[in-house]
Length: 230
Image (cartoon, rainbow, N blue to C red; front, side, top):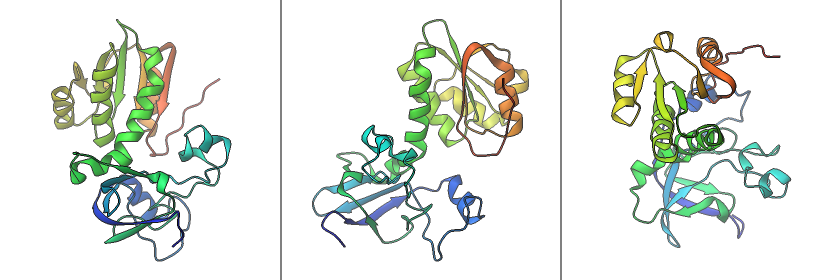
């Protein structure tokens, strides 16, 4: 390895639905063998327990310079394009992708690398639309949606609603801070912002139907839905 690369001993690696997309070939053909896993924590002699940021950019383009390496044209994310964290050891190409965990638990922290950061970025984009008296809708109360409910409850003054056809997930969403959670068909708009963590055809149509004029609809999921706009 080069002087800039770091080998970590993997402590934990989360399971993400994107792993299934990769295994099914939905992200295109990948070199084989491919080790999946991109929600990784590990251990190094220098830092102890560490968190690995796995969207690896070129480090030189305007996107990387702005801190948005996940949309670098030459990005090569671990577990999707490079060898990932379902292994005993993992090679990280640059020290800037290693962050000390401090007193955080390595197992509990692993999903933050994708699920936690993806939901946080979506919430951060929505915050300017969410002043006092506004309502925000989270579509899909799976892992990412549950993160979003917590972030929205902590960071905004908006009333947080959740749309999910699964009653058990709706109940969990309320425990995490949502003031209302129900099947999207039973919800009434308008919402200042809609965060769609499914992005299937039905959820996008629900989001467009429930969104207020001048509102913001963010499609985060990868389930292939499309809606026309003009």
